Image (tube, rainbow, N blue to C red; front, side, top):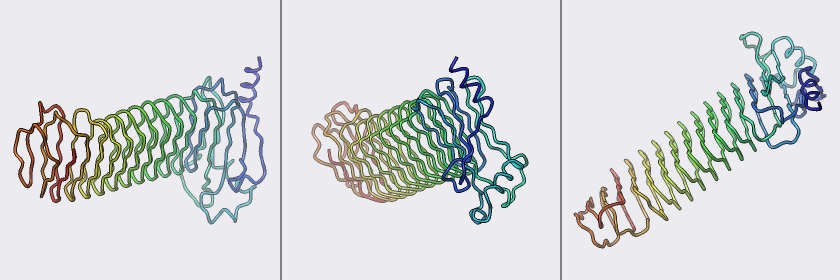
Amino acid sequence: MKRNLLLLLFMLGVFCVHAQWGQNETPFLTQSFSPAAVKVIKAETSGGFIKVEGGRSSGLVEVYVTPSNGGMRKKMSEQQIKEILNRYYDLEVRTSGNTLLVRATRKDHSWSEKTALSVSFKIHSGKNVDTELKTSGGSITLSELKGDQLFKTSGGSLTIHAVDGKITGKTSGGSIDVTDATDEIDLVTSGGSIKADNLKGRIRLKTSGGSLSLSDLSGTIEARTSGGSITASDIRGDLLTSTSGGSVTLSGIDGNLEASTSGGRIRAQLVGTKDFVKLRTSAGGVNVNMPRTSDAQLNLRGNKVNISRLGNFNGSIEKDHVRGTIGSGKLLVEVAASSGNVDVNM
């Protein structure tokens, strides 16, 4: 009975309007809901941020409204902003079945600095929730959730913390910061750096214009950048990483490793190996420290190749290459530097 009453109040749209909401410090409106009744959150806005915080015992939607043009913020009164919102925007906050719908869309597609508003959402929900989120000009933040998360922004950062499940996110112009997440993670940015810490599962990270900073990851990891450096530490599992324009620094790697760069040096320190170690650079040298093995196939190339003393080696050792096997050759070690030296310490 209590649950039905809460849903009824939500459907009726009981809003709590506050003062000073025009400065993005206090919500324009808030609306409560029963988190036990909501399993899916769908939120969309054209010019503001979206933040979903899970693990709450009480559900709440906070809506923030400000002028999009910074120069207009001091010129517009709260009453003027409210009139623009009512006239030019459709604002929807309601439930439909087990889905929470939160949307702010313009009634027409024409843009004017006098009528452009930034409408943002902060949503407090339960933990077991799927999300579908979209904004054209703001950041997206997710925390303390478990489920399938699908989100996209055209001009803001992505921040994910303590989320378990299938995570799929994309930004066209911002950085990505993801921590304490598990399961299946797929995050892409076209113009920012990526920082990832304490992740487990199948992980794919990609940026077209920023650096990669990876730490304490386990599972199958693919991390790519087209224009920045790569640093990674304490990685367990399979690490496949590449950059077109920066150095690669790896430490505490335990498992399969494939790393390449077209414009920098590679330094790799491995604490454990599995099936292969593949390192390649077109504009620098390679320095590798790895555990001694009695069972490897070596293919090392560079201007000069330096390798620690090998036992039970069958092959050729020249100034610029080393090719051959140790034992039966189970572990594949391929290292290539087109314009630098190769140093391998086993």
